[in-house]
Length: 226
Image 1 (spheres, helix red, strand yellow):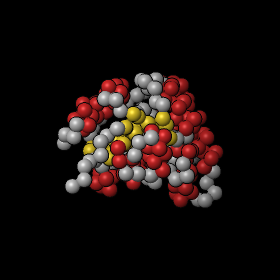
Image 2: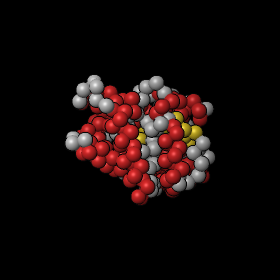
Image 3: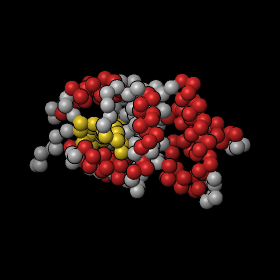
Image 4: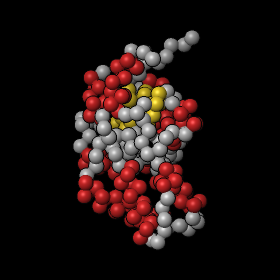
């Protein structure tokens, strides 16, 4: 039996995992569609979670028509989200500070792999006041294929200088879970807006309720405890 690779780094999704931004994103879509006289249903938002801009564009073209003015609508949605952020800031997900402190205390490297563009991701992380530096980030506009393809996680591992098998990924979305697993990482799911699908659940190494639990369990995971 081959040895289980050690865990030397963590790779984190951002929206819905580190930052509690999914509700404001959904509100931005709802507001934008309402201003256009259209409804934006919860199932539509759930299908967009974890996708990059290019894949969201393809999704809406399939829902509506190939000539759907996605770029215009997306720009309007970003403006709506920025208004929401200006009103209340960007909250951190509960337990993030404790988890990042545990990662640092254990001497692990860390990276962010997000479908959000690199520039906007850095803006959001800074505005939210994420504790400690995040030196390594892979953004959705830096890869050819978004989640559930493995590209983002492979890029994060490359920038970490650590094999994917020695990275522990943390995700909340189905596309993200499948992407990390396809990259060869073990994946911990911390559900946010929706429960993981059967496919995502079967791909997960662990499913836990919060980053608080991740902080508590991380030392045992590194020690090889079940």
